[in-house]
Image (cartoon, one colour):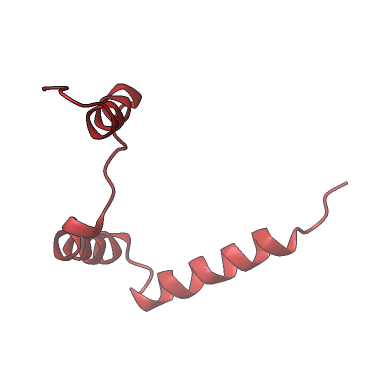
Length: 68
């Protein structure tokens, strides 16, 4: 028994609109996304800092005489 999930249906409908915008051509879509990635590269999050880097930053900020 399969039921249609409204969220899945909405995501698929949006995907179809995006595909239609680029003439259902994946290469055109990919090319545009890479252009946008370059344009907004400073705003993209690539990976979070490792936990030890965050911990070290906090220690440096709160403990006196900690040198790095």
